[in-house]
Image 1 (cartoon, rainbow, N blue to C red):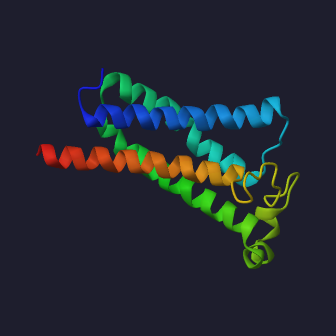
Image 2 (image 1 turned 90 degrees about the vertical axis):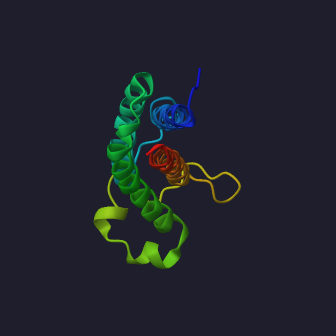
Length: 145
């Protein structure tokens, strides 16, 4: 089914985006965890990746990477900031009320596996995996030329 490594990477990135999207919906809609402001921004950047990567995979469009990489980098930076607020006391103290306060504080830690795997950490991992897959595709495309 996968003729090229690029096809496999598109499929992989699409699956990662689907798992992240379905995971976030499961946590909020089924378990009732209300997302904070930063979680919403991460969702805003992850959800379209599911659709874009799915269409790109079925069309075999590796050029989609020029749209996927910026969305994933911005989402990853937001996730990294969110993880920093949750994990580093100095960052938490320096966070402005607009980012760490609201109906649900960005410091809220609904999920904490092994003492460090939180929801923003899972989002960060997903964005990193998608970026890595797009970079592999970019390298494959350069080799082709």
